[in-house]
Amino acid sequence: MEERVVVVDDDAIILKNANVILSEAGFKVTCLKSGRLLMDYIARNPVDILLLDIRMPEMDGFETIRALRDWESEKNREAVPVIFLTANEDSDSEAKGLSLGALDFIRKPFSSEALKIRVRNLIDLICLQRDLHREVAKKTAQLESLSLHVVHTLAKTIDAKDAYTNGHSERVADYSREIAKRYGYDEPGQEEIYMMGLLHDVGKIGVPDTVINKPGRLTDEEFEMIKRHPVIGAEILATVSEMPKLVTGARWHHERYNGTGYPDGLKGEDIPEEARIIAVADAYDAMTSHRSYREIMAQDKVKSEIEKGIGFQFDEKFARIMLEMIEEDTEYTMHE
Image (cartoon, rainbow, N blue to C red):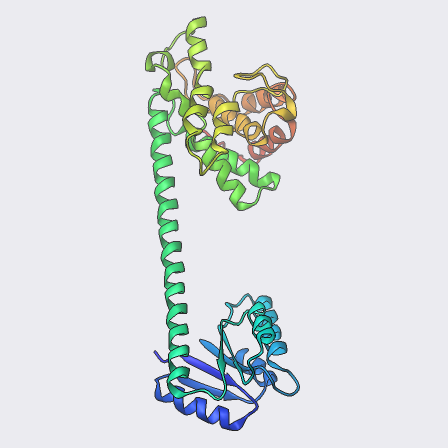
């Protein structure tokens, strides 16, 4: 495909020479006599590179590049690479041009070989940069997809330790994300709390299966083992430096709003906000899942338990959002 080069200069001889040289080199060339004509042209046509004279009547090159960059910003367009054409050896003009976003300068009068080489080299460099950005974006998306797959797999492995839960971590993650969304979290914040919800119980890896699956009442010693899982989870996730907030959900999802939770006995606003959200989602899913000692609780009973927990177990604002979600779930589909 021919690269599209636009040359802007008020000198007809310069335009003619540039057109001949660059057309022979295989470029598709458009010649314009003013900055105003350029602004009209660029609104309707794609441009790969712009050669722009500095000294022109009406709009000089500096005014033109400012107008161009403002237009690109307003329209969310990628910046067109600019090479300034200049007859001066003025270092101040070069510094000013570079500060406005020009990538290079070509002295007038120019030789045909110098013009072709400078334009070709700059276009090749820009193409390489764009290819690199695309490749980085592609690899980043692949890594993010892989990471999410790994997290889902780990969450399922954790849930598999408990014979009485199936998909607990994913449901807690879904409920947490919905509460966060309704509370006003932006999309990245929603995805972050979703990941925290998926891994909130990762510390159960360090608790014996016999304790997790014991059908009867736990001894004090066994309950202390269970209570260790938030600390174990936080220690595991502390090694994931790319996502430091994962620790929050794992360590503090069993804290209670009145300070009677574990492992740290945090109270009220001292409990991180994401953990307060996950605490509501986790309790809801516990009540709406099968257990060895009971079936899924009736929806009215679940609603009553959450209402009773406001201010004691739960932060009111997040419990109210969960209650709103329950009210909307008229067919009672939010359960295991």
